[in-house]
Length: 257
Ligand SMILES: *[C@@H]1O[C@H](CO)[C@@H](O)[C@H](O)[C@H]1NC(C)=O
Image 1 (cartoon, rainbow, N blue to C red):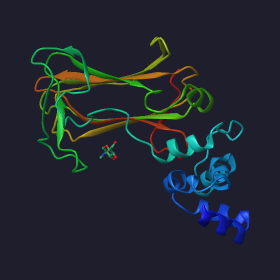
Image 2: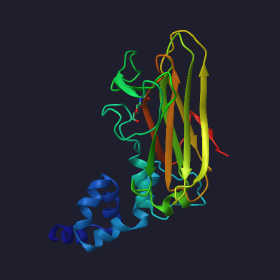
Image 3: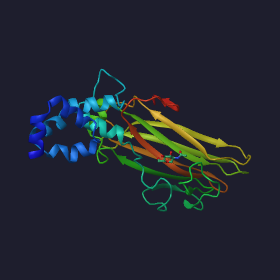
Image 4: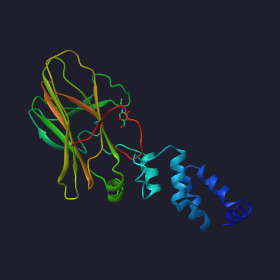
């Protein structure tokens, strides 16, 4: 309180604002905001977060539809994360709903072929009968409010890695559904359905899609993947990310119609 008073009296408001903008966001929220009423007002103002987004290059895709809550926009853009649980088979099949469990069923194993990123050491393996597994992401539970989803319609980035068995025919599939409040599909996107002929020694393959224009009312995302092949298709490091801030994509952007 005293500190605030001293600074408050000694330096102009614009300078305090400038200082706050140069401190890390979490410190501003957790510490500075509690110092006094004047600072709280500054930290709670849309102007502070709009300015912070501007200086850090975080902008919505559509400038004519700015975020209603710049603070939420800041944090959700800055701290993007993978919404899939256990994407790298570190906890067995935990977190995944098994949809199809053909022949010898889903299993997990250590990667026999090194993955490009050495933090990924395990994978899921299908059987020669069709194996599919899925996860349902509850956007509200993950912090993406209805208003946020409907107003900003952030890009949704999906990525998956798979490796076909060498020497056998195989089939890999990935599909993504955008569901409403009642879990009815608004859109189903079948970005990938790939058949490989009996072939050579395949490397790990990555699939990346960025979805936009999937419409309003999306409350859940269902990610389903799997396939079949004689000694199994391997999948790992799957991800689903919500990307509110504009960026240039090197991967394909899907309109998902
Ligand atoms: C594996 O997934 C993590 C988290 O989603 C990501 O940061 C990393 O880049 C991925 N690795 C590769 C090689 O794509």
